[in-house]
Length: 285
Ligand code: 9MG
Image (cartoon, rainbow, N blue to C red; front, side, top):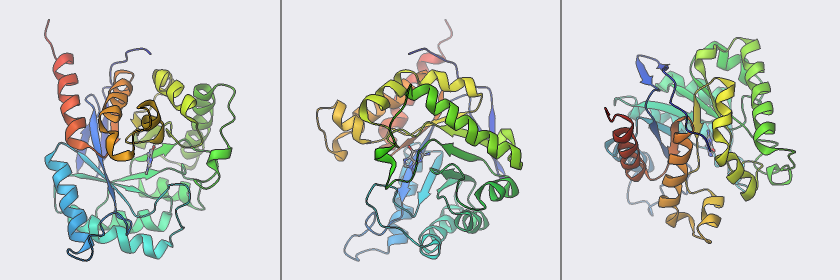
């Protein structure tokens, strides 16, 4: 592991700007039917928005809204259904001072979401769906290009690497190159090594230990480790609800190595950890 200062860079998100010289928390807002089902007591949209507002109060500067579950075994969702889940929430969040990212691989979903006020495209499939590259160039918004092999349904059989870190860097670099060639601006690109996507526990740990090597690509880096299975395994088999501290620790290790944004469920805990990290870094001695 090597310590790396964060880049002096700004991400332009519509009228807002994100200063990437200090780490940011991206709060996770899943708007799949199972995420906010409370037996019909509250409207699912209102419950989702209330959760997002709480994450903002807890320190999130970005909210990542997702209407498709990428867990292995999750059922496919139509574009129309994804739009129906995501857009009303985005319309509501756009009334607040927060940067909205959309976790989708579908060009029609991101177009509808941007129309409704979203700022960033977070694509776990790295703009591989038909027309995705051209749409990213045309929308001229920041895009998060994540490393994965195959699809969430097939990725677990695709974890053969010579050297996981170097292979991820090479494959991400190719996706970035494809984006640049079609006209995506370099200042709109963020990268993400895709922890847990087509990687086993040992490979995820090696990637975390060598996270600093991703800086060689020259783009701001998102790290998304929150409650992932390998964190649970490192904790001796903790279930998802008991992985907050392990996730915060792993995220901090990635921040030390250059991550300028972390995608988190446990926003308050993560923000507190970053406050300590910032205090340490701003020491004038
Ligand atoms: C939506 N989503 C789930 N896991 C993710 C990860 O590791 N990175 C990014 N960018 N998005 C993710």
